[in-house]
Image (cartoon, rainbow, N blue to C red; front, side):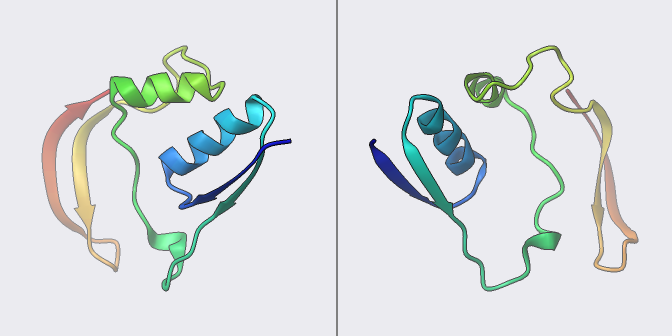
Length: 90
């Protein structure tokens, strides 16, 4: 069996691992950070290429992959709103 080691558990790293496993490879994915990862990111803006990649990984393409937004908010560490912008996204 072919083996792969992927360094980086980003969306792309995880997708690469899923695709390789689907074609029979043994895959290990490693992620390392000097900080706690629980506070990383608030979401992913889904572009057409991201939807195509998710489809290759077996995700449904029925329009329920994400949520629609009308406003983007930026929050302070205490949860208060620092900035709010009208920014419709699908």
